[in-house]
Figure 1 (cartoon, helix red, strand yellow):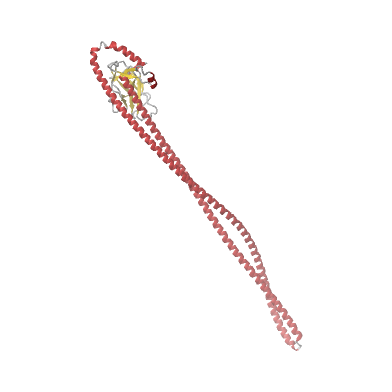
Figure 2 (cartoon, rainbow, N blue to C red):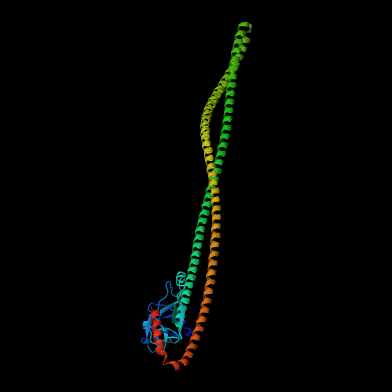
Length: 464
């Protein structure tokens, strides 16, 4: 692994020691969160010990994957086409990352471009065929492909990197799905809270309306009781006035009887006097005169008494007239009271109707309240079911994420195993190179004539 500056914002990864100019070269690197990426950033292939940025051999623009957000780390890759690569030589090169300001952000370790050795770096592969083709050509000879070992290793490395990128994209998609599920659950919970608050407010309004209706019913019952009490008072007063009227009539009748008795007494006295005058003689004239004088004085007294009685009679008649006027006034009052009683009866009927209607409204409100309570219970049960469904979905998503994590872990372990195999193959490749360098000293004159036709045929078949 290459050694780089710990403060660099860009890190090159998987940089090999040798590259072949006949194939495309891929440069893998990671952009840290401290790097301010720009579309003007570029990566160039420079000779080791360059003095200016213009001394690049070739370059490629630094591109980031889709969905990149500034300030987040990301893995990237650029490709250098084989046509622009340097020719095989012992000159050492390295990758250099340059930002839009012309500042060098990172440098990779050095590598060289060399030509593949025809025989030692070739691998023989058996061509894959379908089952139908295998059935048709069972008796034919198998077709063998000969490719460079480095090309094969690079192809395997690219497949591993692509598989890792796909796994990473799958993990990112799973995280996005989990975030979306969390947001949808939060939105559903907020909607349910708002609906619950609206239902609670509506129930409170219905309770207030029911309370007002109960208060109105109580006031109507109080008014009805007041009307009944006032009706009872009016009835008692009417009976009292009727009893007073009867008493006044009895008093008037008694006075008239007394006046009649007095008149009868006066007539009887006059008749007695006349009889006594005719029966008595002249001797008794003086006595009669005395008696007459006494009688006259008594008559005067009686006249005075009569006048007094007449005055009393007139006073009693005035009292009777006053009583009659009072009686008429009481009758008018009684008539007014009767009218008021009738109005009160009609009002009482209206009050009974209103009270009945208010009772019906109270019953309807009670039914509505019970229905709202039933709906609230149903909503609570539905919310509990939805919450359980959300929990089960969250558990399933969590299980899915755990499975994806375990799959990513297995893929990473597999990638590490492939990397270890690749390092072993590189070490074996280096040992074989060293051994071949020692063995080719004696066969150097014979090998080119034998190998060149084979190499041209192999490179032509690979290009094809």
